[in-house]
Image (cartoon, rainbow, N blue to C red; front, top):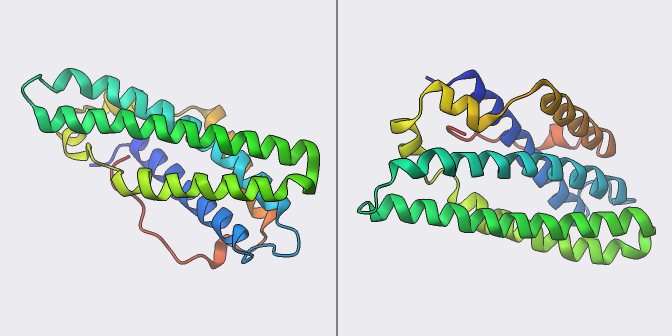
Length: 191
């Protein structure tokens, strides 16, 4: 059975996917082609918040799973090592996107091309490293976690939920109607 904490994380991840797809579409001229800068900024603001939460959740996930992976369990150990590697790659990619966002916000359209290059690098990492390997520890989570573990990993707070909702609304304003036109996605299992 899915806990309330898991459901909230699932909703966050689904909306993060929608924002990621909106950013990709803006880069391809499919969303706000006449002036994509507001979409770029809104998507980047959302992704910064969402990925900061995801990174913190995954660090806590590793912290809770690590004691269950004995030294002789090479497969489980490898999954945890890969989780740490994906986290490092994601944190680095997000730092690049945020720096490009900040330059775009500070210096305007002259930074658009640099932002677009960095955003494409970010999306490449997101799609080819993070999404390709998500949920690699799902079986271990389901076997080892109690509701209290899920609550700890999710760290759902009213403030985080309010900020996520506000930033999601900013993306909807920057690309009106666009996210409604996205094909539906299946919410990710587990976390």
